[in-house]
Picture 1 (cartoon, helix red, strand yellow):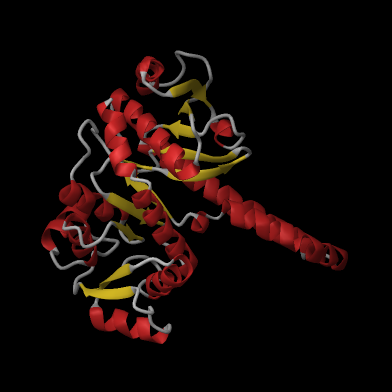
Picture 2 (cartoon, rainbow, N blue to C red; picture 1 turned 120 degrees about the horizontal axis):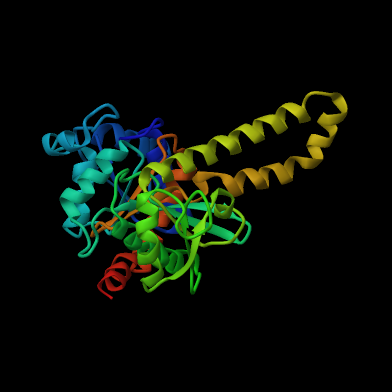
Length: 321
């Protein structure tokens, strides 16, 4: 029931995931409203089931209070289904803070993890870069960055197929000793960790293929993510304006359209659909509030991939050493 386009986009996306990826989906929300949408979009062919949840955690609700108070909220019911084994993982495009709060309350942390992290996958010259934390925790300790590096390494290995991911620490310079107190204290810990640490990295390194995993606090990561999204939208808008400004350019635009569509697809958050909350003891993916049906379908696919690859178990093994 959460997200700017809910519940229509969630229902349509779930039906797409069922048809295209062969996945079984539980739609958790107000039963009458959700069932009507399932029927409107042609039904789920037996792969989509509606679970009633009469309450909703709104975007303006205080996350922790709402999770405790609204026992019948779709987020809470969804997490209970995962905790009780009725579902393998969960996805929400609603209140991000509430999604994190309910995951912590219902699943708990993986032993050895101090703070969970949101892991987003950015496009790069070499393929992809996993950035974490993208906004789960703005204030962390140096050991948290080591934990993020270990979790990001597992995620890159299992979901992106990179055998030995290169890990970098997001900083304001490449030299050891650069940055704030958090970065300076984390550097030697990362060097000693059982990961392939390549040192400090700067902004361009997130996209030039130098690293496969980039770690930072949630404040920095969220700013990086939002700036990256803004730059992509801005540049594509500039291209559209230039290519439609004169008759001759409009002709060129027709020839360039396939390339522009390809660029949009490679930089679209909806292609992966959602970011996993790594560090909690259950599979939880959190999507963009603007997620459309295609983004929802891809998010559900990402949840299934994380379950199939046993990401939680492998992170637990990595942290335990």
